[in-house]
Image 1 (cartoon, rainbow, N blue to C red):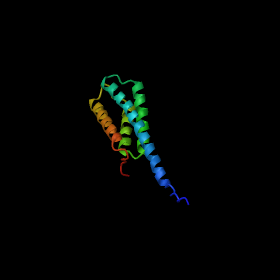
Image 2: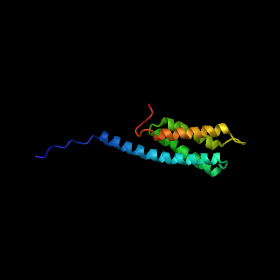
Image 3: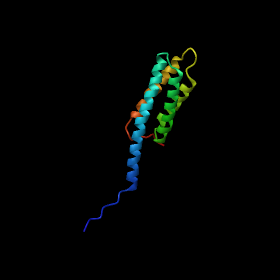
Length: 123
């Protein structure tokens, strides 16, 4: 007689799938953060052009949705603020405080996205 095999728990399979999707989203969001960092470097060098701004706006927008979907509320909020800043563009004549804010938010975004894999903000 063959011993009866326990049936796999569908919830376990779903949790495993969600972990895989979250890891994939995390990697994609880190790549999008690199696009934002490139735009920030262009800003610092005084060569932020429309192409950099459009790429930054698109990347930030994707992080907003993806991070929010996987419970990374802080990352989503940071990315939304960066999206708005790059959409509006720096004020004429430069904005040292704005550049510093972008720099700080990008550092915080990268830190939040690279925090422990299964971390999610409390809902």
